[in-house]
Length: 206
Image (cartoon, rainbow, N blue to C red; front, side, top):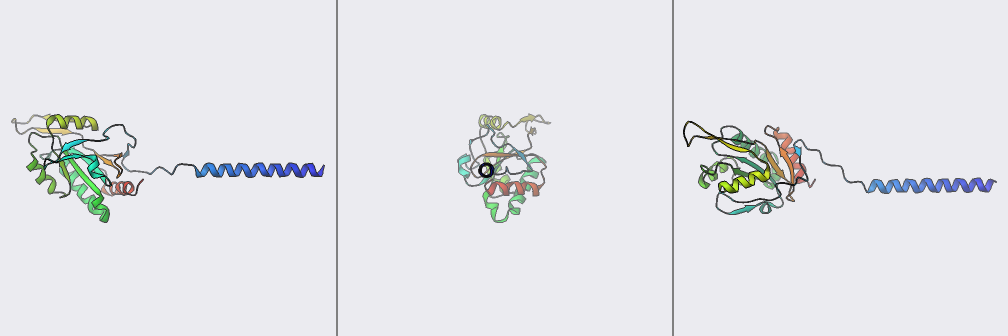
C-alpha cells in the first residue's frame, strides 16, 4: 500500500514538472512585445508599399533608394502658408534632436502643385529647411497616382486670379522603417519629442 502511494506521488510530481516545462517552452516561444508609438501605428498597411517619381534634379527616385533609413514622406506645396513650412521646420529640428542618428532620417517632400512648383523652386524650398531632404516633382498624373496610393487628399482652391490659387491637402506624414516597411501615420501637430521618440524606436529595429 505504501509503495502504491509513493508511486502515485512520483507520477504526480512527474506530471507537474512536465507541465511546468511545457509552460516554460510556451513562454519562450511568445512573440516579443509590440513597440508602443505616439503616432498612429499602421504597420502591415497594404498601401504605399513603393513609389516612383523624379526628384527636383530629374533623377528617378523610389523607396529603395533610402534603404537603411527611416523615411518621412509628406505631401505639400511651396506656397503653402502654414502647414507645410511648419512641418518641414519641425522635421529639421527632429533630425537635430536625433543627434548622430539624424543622418538616418530621410525627409521626402512630394509637391501637389506641379504647375507652379518647378524643380528650381523646390530645390530652393527644400534646401532652406534641410539640405539633405528630397523633393519629388512629378507630372500631374504621377502626383495624382502617388497621392491615391497614399490615400492623400488634395484639391485646388481658386483664388482672386488664375495663378493665385491655393491647395487644400492632407496634413499628416508617413514614416517607413529602415527595412522599407510603412509603419506610422504622423498627425499634424504631433509634439516633436514624441515624434523623435517614435523615429528612434524605428531606427532601433522595432
